[in-house]
Length: 64
Image 1: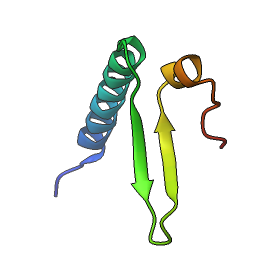
Image 2: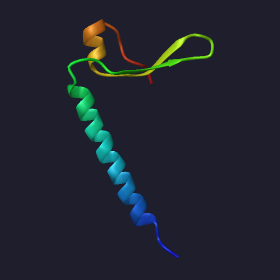
Image 3: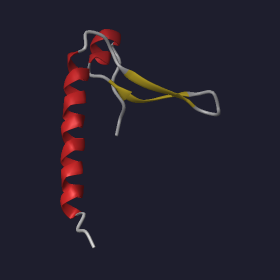
Image 4: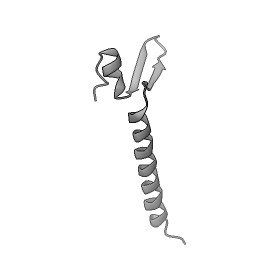
């Protein structure tokens, strides 16, 4: 039997590092990044807006 707890901790650490790296890239892009979902009722949902969106379009980001 193998204890996978060390592997799990290492995987979580790698995920965190990748998340931080991606966040750094997104924060330094000259444009904007967003995720748009077209819902079945035809409405649009934006679960992610980069920090540059308010400055470029005078809008606020998503509310949590």
